[in-house]
Length: 616
View 1: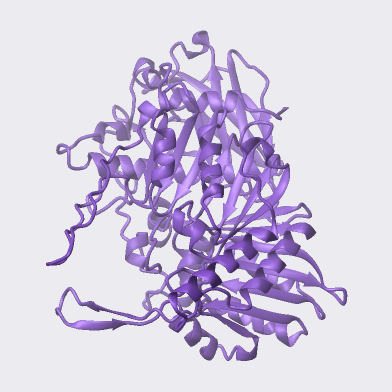
View 2 (view 1 turned 180 degrees about the vertical axis):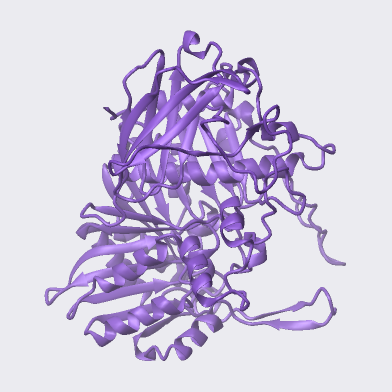
């Protein structure tokens, strides 16, 4: 939901609500900015008196040496920003927010200005809408976790079981609830068609077993390719066997949970590719009518739900479910080249498989031809046209594009954006790792030609109107009041390949009147387009969906942007950036960050130019 307040003494508040998240921006006239030290923020709900929200930074002249035990309120240590977010909201709840302009001096604040009030309602977690969307917390490396759980691990046997369960609930937020609710919605006589890369999270396996017991026809395709390999152990120097992944983990879970093997279909062909889907199709009743789909980026694993960033997407759309059913039925035949096939047979089978995938739904590759509503995209495909369309969407965005990238910036996207200028659309990228030059590639073995050199590395930056954040945490050197994030996503070791940013979604003009959301299992890469089994949704024109994804992207980007900046500056010089952890003592100091062309000013304009809002 998009809202804006009335104009009060030169200030106006804009808000976008998600399920657990509300994002705000404040515009102010030059006159309103005079003497402004920031905003005290109150929040109230259910008729209760509003309470001032906690602050994180302090005035150095008031609290010169904050510690990790320091707790302050925005009433005394205001928000010095025209963009603010509340990531602690509850679903389907009404709130009133009051933004109080503060003037005066840090030790003698003037609170006489009239507050700007705005009333909002968050989106329900479960609804009767076409789409419900579930994000996990995705931030084990956070101040909130460190303070709430004293940096303990959720698998630490010294922690009481009740507390460990609370840790996991916090990390999952409502993602596991969404998965389990989808399964529980299947009734006697229904069918659940499942397709999973990883199938090793016991609560989901047990829920599917329970569905079988109540008369649901459950069929599960799992990635079971044989891809075992040998490698040299770095510590011992010995050659060790690396078992097939995720095949062996999946089969161990099936055996441990006593899940019936006659309900399992092994996906073993094309063993050099990843069978990367994570979806379920609900087919209803005697007529076997496909009606609903669960999809997204979430692997059925402990790490998928409690570790890295992930999203689950519940779609109530018969046409979408029918397409997913057709894709499932194709995959159930284990198509593509098999072990033992000769080269020509492999090529023929793979081509036939790719063409059959593309035949499920015709996807326009010209941006203007993308239909409103929901389109499905399945992989592998014969060419990269769909991937190029995604990159074209970003390049042609009118105002803003946001994208999560688990495996770096694809060269095709980098090439598209290299000619972008600071006055073009603003682009936010949330990456697993910092985008930087890769180490030199080794030359070929003795007697063989050396490998081709990589093209020169060119990083997208503010000069291209591109802003990047990447997975990171506050390490052993805590910054004043900031607590060491010891239980970071790396230390949890829940994930083998992607530690922080595993979600795969793209937002194009999310605050416009015609937003586009692309979401699913594919990593916006060549491999995920022409190699792996993958699925994506393209959702055009649904503002509610765009608002939920946009506010969650804000949450994740802001969280990791702060940590990424700290990580990049940590080695520059001792003490670099530490003063920025304090509030500025004068208006001129903090308002300087909002000069025209600055990132902060651009973010305010994103909200001020949004479409489809209500005045409250």
